[in-house]
Image 1: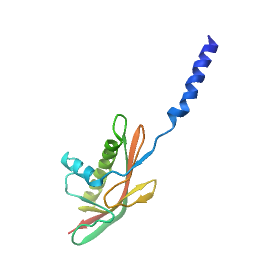
Image 2 (image 1 turned 45 degrees about the horizontal axis):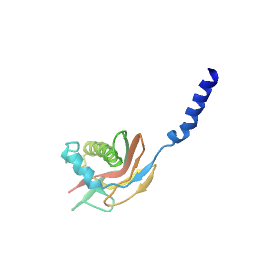
Image 3 (image 1 turned 135 degrees about the horizontal axis):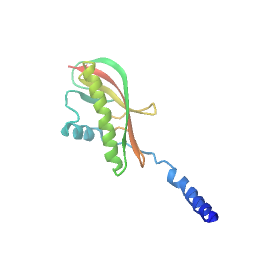
Image 4 (image 1 turned 30 degrees about the horizontal axis):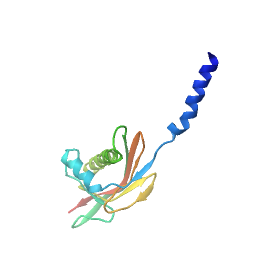
Length: 147
């Protein structure tokens, strides 16, 4: 009986490397689509506007606090990569909205992805990393008052 148990254990252990290798797929989804989805669902209240690096609000902009960061992850199990990325971005934007409101700001400007402290600036897309279990988004931006 013991040999049979060892054979089963060896077979299970030999399968682990292929199972345990983490998937880390980098995606660059559309930012505006996720913001609109969050606004339509009431997750963002519209009092704070978000501007990716390369875009600016019309009028005068006064930075209240520079270099504000957030990193959010979400459960990706049974979700598409795009769906999980949207959830992670929305969570990050909710954090930034709350930080902006607490600072008296009505905008987050110069917004860039900041995954593992490596900035990715794009005027239309954000960076997301999706795996089999988790998806994550990291952002960095400046809290500002836009007039």
